[in-house]
Amino acid sequence: MDRREIFNILFKGSLVNEPIVPEPDPVLETPAHLKTDQTVQVFKEWTDLTETGIFKLDLSTEFAFTVTLDLSCPLTASGNERPVNLIIGLKPDHAASVKIGLNEQGCLFMDQLMDERTIAKDKLLTGVQLVLTVNPLGMGMSFAKLKIMDSAGLTLSSIKSMQYTTADWVGEMALTNPAFNSLRIEGLHTTEI
Image 1 (cartoon, helix red, strand yellow):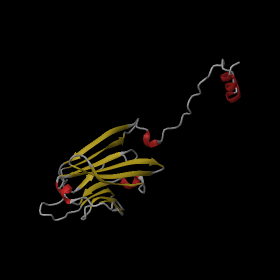
Image 2 (cartoon, rainbow, N blue to C red):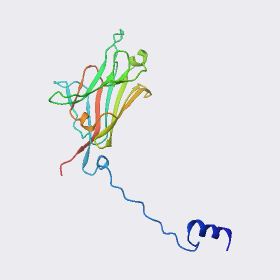
Image 3 (cartoon, one colour):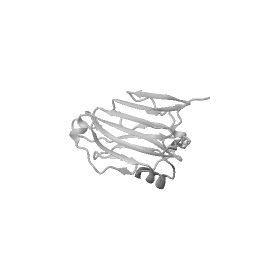
């Protein structure tokens, strides 16, 4: 008997010649927000304001979704500052909704959460893109990330929050500043069985 066999007997408790039977991995149930069997892909894009100024968010917030707002020039050429706000989760009873955007100082915000970094005005004059990504975490909560990118696709600033529920995003969207290139939503919608 050599040293290897002795160590195997001591530490494994079995002989070397016994076959190793692999045990299957435990099967875990897939969380509800990851089950995409009965869903369809949703992609909508607007380039102009609607008559009412309200955009329908026709997707399920129980799944991950992305809202992208392309802005050609959020500041005027003369330097007058204009805030850009996108309100998501508008409900018919005017319940609280989530306000995201870029304020007058050039800081990214999501309701009360604000990034302390100010984005230079020359970066804003070339055009920017606001991207909101919302991912469900389970138990009704969500992870939201808002970032602003320049025309070259480089991230200028970003903020993250886990304080919102998936129900906070349900509703419609509205823009406070009508000067935009496009507004896009991407996500999933549940189908009727």
